[in-house]
Length: 377
Image 1 (tube, rainbow, N blue to C red):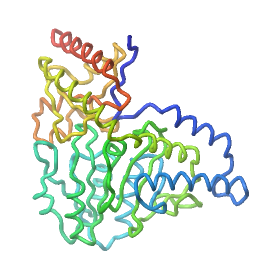
Image 2 (cartoon, rainbow, N blue to C red):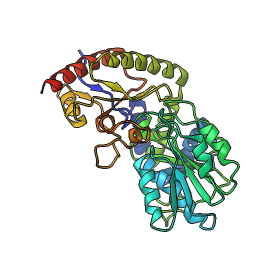
Image 3 (spheres, rainbow, N blue to C red):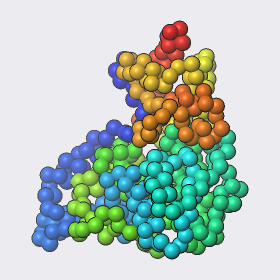
Image 4 (cartoon, helix red, strand yellow):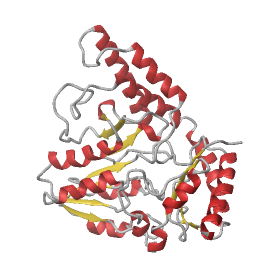
């Protein structure tokens, strides 16, 4: 009998034992500050450089292009604010979408106070951006395009390669991609991308460590000043144990990725087909979405009510993204043209390569039971 069913992997993932072992080992064995000049410090610096080398090789980027931060939210802020602060004369126009994480949407809204013009690309019914509208919005005044690889709520995958090819025709425009929900789930290619965000706690790693990949031909203004660090773009004592465990988590997550994708896709198809058989359930995700994310609505039931009903059975999913602000409506679903009733009742089920078929079957029984009971009320 399964005790707990966790299907909220897009919010955060349980830490792998191997990753935690690395964190503990490094914490105990490497007590020196990586910035110190004595032997302990030099040993710590060598380990940090090795971890950085591993991450760079896995992502096929240069070692000096990796900047460690505390979270993907910080990485997104550093990418956006750091770019516009460094290039104040390149224009005050930013293009994004309403599908983005709050750390992007709230940052660009903040910049509106300082004269920046923000345009949001129209979104098609399947959640992908309208390429014609995207091309129409770009101009010589566009300093930055920030579009996520995978939407965290519905799971829509954007055609980043095509977007990068379009942006390439605007040499003074930078492309920032939030890859937090993509890394470890689908293959990522950073060609044509100037700035790329991802974090450890979506990869069965520890929270508190993330990275911003900043291509070598791009400069940004630091947001944290003072003190030597791993990178001149982000001050602060390097968190060696977190960095080493980050490298371990990424390596493990990318191992046998194609095999993991197939397994998750099988679970997705079984779960989606089964959910479609439950009266009153609407599937919002589609074939252009990440298989590990299934967004559904049960219009007659409030999402919070369903969440707590499932919680009583030790089952855990989510309503919107864990970092979304207040309000009932799902912004991505509204952008996709869904009705207010659908957007007001969305639920996110997110899988992992560690999710089992037995867990999914048990979840379906409990979910259907909760739907039936709550409809009666």
